[in-house]
Length: 109
Image 1: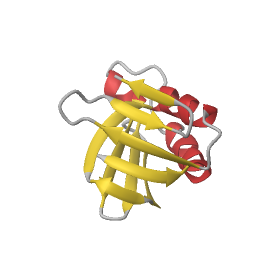
Image 2 (image 1 turned 90 degrees about the vertical axis):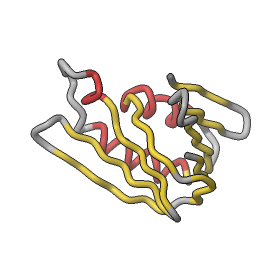
Image 3 (image 1 turned 135 degrees about the vertical axis):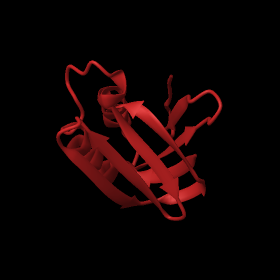
Image 4 (image 1 turned 180 degrees about the vertical axis):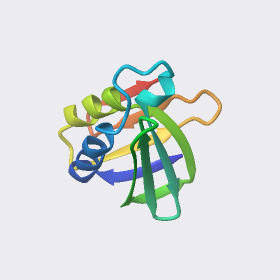
């Protein structure tokens, strides 16, 4: 997966989605959000097994794919990047998500 997206719009959507993840989950995956890049948008999904949200956001997709990432960590990182656009990529084998701004690069395992 590899996308380029407007930072402010992504922050808004991830902020909304993170309200739907489980806070004290017995299953750690419920603290994650699901990101799926396809054609010209990204689909963001989150659930705590009682509530569910799915939001589509337009973006430039260089490589389709999907990954899950910890909602809190992801939101904290994208909020710290001051650039208007960021690139997000995920290695399908290692499941490492890389978030790049003009000056900063972050990896999430």
